[in-house]
Image (tube, rainbow, N blue to C red; front, side):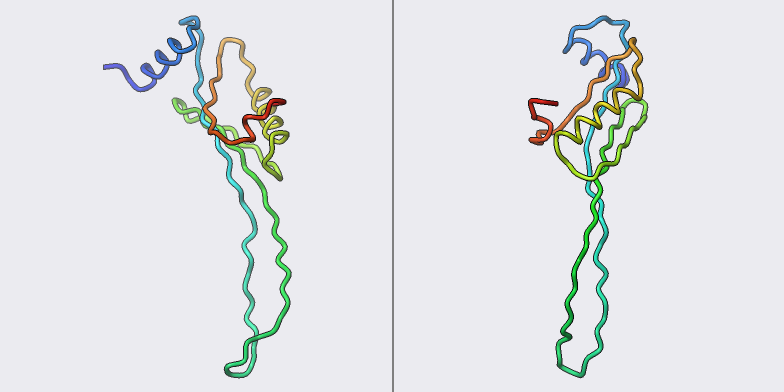
Length: 121
């Protein structure tokens, strides 16, 4: 019985009909947003009197883009301040610069986000 990596490699080669000696790397990509959580402060008042205080929440968010190669577990992460097609294009460019071996074909599975469907990526 063939292993998962052999079956996946065979299916990818048959899907794209490429040379059998070309090494295929199958990546999945997703991103997450991380930020600061507001801290609630206690206010001292008399019994049954609601505290009156103005609070201005200042959030700072960061997006973490991640690529993981399923067969080897190799990973690539990149941090950006926002999630749009320009940032995603920068992440793809950084990913392409990371490993530019001509004997490998990198297949990246993406979700259906509108950011990934921009025509100028």
